[in-house]
Length: 123
Length: 507
Image 1 (tube, chains in turn orange, cyan):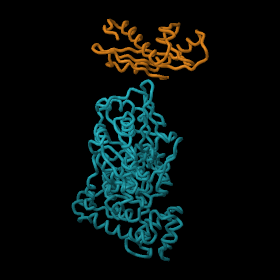
Image 2 (cartoon, rainbow over the protein chains, first blue to last red):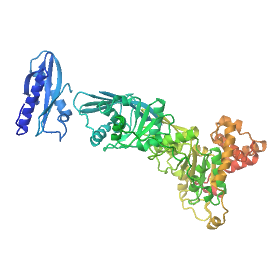
Image 3 (cartoon, helix red, strand yellow):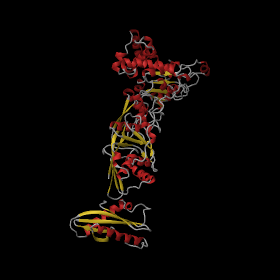
Image 4 (spheres, rainbow over the protein chains, first blue to last red):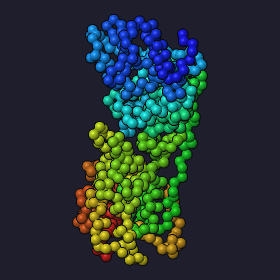
């Protein structure tokens, strides 16, 4: 487990994504891509299992003073994630499979351990 | 997890049973309310979230789906807050789901978790009784109202916290106490009115036979004072009548907090600027209008010619049928509207036509316009026309003490008892076919009537109205037959009023 507290927002985000990938791997998924970019934007994590492709948004927050991380995935973000998934499917060769959208939230208070939560099939 | 309970949705005056299903499932935090909820129903989401936070319950940050079956019945109002909150408490696992078995609830939540009064609690309680609810939880302020329905267990809640503690078995809710004192509040007394012999007599006849009445006369003659004294002359409300009156007031949201059964006949005096929907009921979600609020009571229309023509015409259905039908795109609703109509009119816009002490300042065209506001069909449905005279100071002082309400009411009650035993309804509500059966007149009386038809130009309906009034006059006298002097008195109260007519003044 990480011991040093992330220095700034960028590092918090990156370390949150690392924790998220660890959680997804624990759940039996294989990480295919991280921070996959195209014109539309960026997908945090793409993971797969046999016959299944998972597009994952990772949200990391220091606390829930501005609402929980999951609440920050609003309608606009959800629509964006759908668009990005479409772009990814067009841009990469893959076998026919089911598609799932997940959100992994990380709450990492200044004092204490990060809490990771994996929400499956949110869209 | 899924939680289920029930509530009621108001459609017109009746409440329909509505289920409340709350599911907390996987997914991003969101609250969806399905089941044709109106704006106030959808806003429950925001009230609930704040109420939970301020009561100390952590908001379940998951996907919350609320369903309000039947899904095709439109639902309005804030009364769904409380049942949804209870369902949420159970779905989130704070209280055992078994506590919701057979439970009904209705009420609005404040942001602080306080439970606020809503309208339509009495109809909801009736619906709960019909559906054999185990218990109905209502806002504390509506508890007396809900307890009016016999055979239904009710409880009052003051706050969401109290509900949570009660569901967990750690506290109790408010229980209905003894019914409030059934004493009937005092009404304005006829003894306050000096002089006005004919007007007082007309009021007595109107009360005895449920007849409609039009007062004309100059401003200050006491038309309004007279009208206000009619409810006191009527018999007290029967239990089922009182329940119906209370139901209308509840559905209209006019019952105050801690209000119980309405025991006084309503007296409604809408302003003449009232709209048609305001008078007979309406709106996208039909609400009862003034005619329904006056059900089993008195509807007083002061300055009748100032009411819009459409409003006057809209009165025709309730006057004939004792109820109104409000039809809208989504629904058609019937409201009861069985009232005694008392109208008052000045003889002209300035009020002094026919006044011996003031000259009328109205132009001829003013008078014509004024007179044309009252349609023949409406006037035809009014049984009694009376002119109220303004008394001089001298007359006011010298007038003998007037008869009090109690004495007049005794005669009215006796006459009504006669009518009940003879025909089941008041003379004023007798169907045309029954008039011939129950309003038999003596031969001399008939001759007077026939002459009046020619002289006064009575329509067929006007003729029947005069017969009904004569029957009431006979009933007040305790006479089995309708004699000629009864008919004469009835006809003396049928002279078309002087409204906007200088010629009539001279006759």
